[in-house]
Amino acid sequence: MKVDVILGLQWGDEGKGKIVDVFTPHYDIIARFQGGPNAGHTIEFDGKKFVLHTIPSGIFHRSTLNLIGNGVIIDPFIFIKEIDKLKEAGINAQENLLISSRAHFILPTHRLLDAVSESKKGHAKIGSTLKGIGPAYTDKYARNGLRVGNMKDENFMECYRILKEMHLRIITSNNANLSELTLDELSFEAYEEKWFESINKMKSFRIVEGEQFLNRSLDEGKSVMAEGAQGSLLDVDFGSYPFVTSSNTIAAGACSGLGISPHRIGKIYGIFKAYCTRVGSGPFPTELLDETGETLRKNGNEYGSTTGRPRRCGWLDLPALKYAIMLNGVDSLIMMKADVMNTFKKIMVCNNYKTGNQVLDEFPFDLSDKTLEPIYQEMNGWNQSLADVTSLDNLPEAIANYIRFIEKETNCPIDIVSLGPDRVQTLKR
Ligand code: GDP
Ligand code: IMO
Ligand code: MG
Image (cartoon, rainbow, N blue to C red):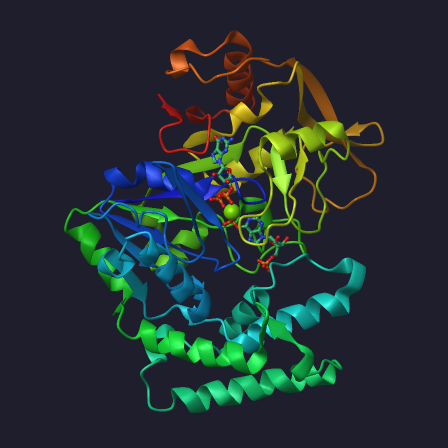
């Protein structure tokens, strides 16, 4: 058996949560491979809405196991809050959730370091989610991190204390005052206390060697879907650096983030919105700072699932999409939120970039280059509700044409079109 991968092709929030949930009945295991609680994956069904940050999006299907992979970083406080929210809705996530012993912890001081780093950067700030992502991955690669598999160790507290003190030295050397800093409206001490309470609760979860579990399951013929977080343009190597997250969001990240060989990768599904959004700072060539951008935000309810910040909106960016398809080796495209453009008479698509009179034939190194301009092609909008459409074969001509155009430009089939946030608002080939 192979591991299929599902990941975002833009700047995150493409609708990964919804589609993973739709796919879950076809898989025995869903495994998140990177990122942390910077992610917000939304799932809607039966009039209910859930936003997951650390827990894989297959959790609502009781017969599918969900693994938090070694590549994920976990804030116990946020994780247990998520677990409790599910409990309130009658879902006992503990039953079908496994956590890799090799996943790293986000410490309370990682979150403080994130805030200090952002405030030091001033206008150049990344616009991070302030969940401690950058500092926690930094410690992982600097070989200072604390891992899930260590939480029952006798010297866990001592290791925590050493790392915390190292962080506090950095924080105070940046003239930040610990007593004035808060985390989710709690004082540092109150947050830290809850963090340890949460660690204690985590001890009752099923901690496994995720890589052993997955490879064994594959040998036994089990089907696995790897769930990405963020999007390819936020990848630490290939995204719009430095305005990126701190992990490899691309398909290759599934191998290192789960402990599976590239040989074991199966089909790669790439998700994109019919337009583009971005939350946080950084270049966004097709951003619309006008009324059309407002309309996309309003129709698409484009506000961050994790931070509530308004998302920046713009037209579909084909050079960026093609670049992401290349990096990931996407086999199958999934187009989300087409319904958001139902009222548009005309739609623009960026099909190239230029600097001066020169059309670029490659995706540029520096997306912040001020001379970079998108070249747009105008297309007819469908300008009608798609609520009654039940099949990809009877779409109105204008949207069918939009789909064909994207397929031709990207040389990749669009096999699923999503027309609303609910599970059932999904058209498949
Ligand atoms: P993720 O991070 O990729 O899982 O995406 P988010 O959950 O952060 O953001 C996607 C948002 O769009 C969520 O609020 C979803 O409920 C919503 N959504 C997903 N698919 C569709 C769709 O086809 N149409 C509309 N209108 N909303 C959608
Ligand atoms: P999902 O999985 C959208 C963005 C932040 C910021 C940059 C770095 O829901 O698609 P970080 O906190 O990672 O250091 O922030 O990345 N970002 C996301 N944007 N969706 C996400 O996740 C994101 N996770 C991080 O806004 O610009
Ligand atoms: Mg999201």
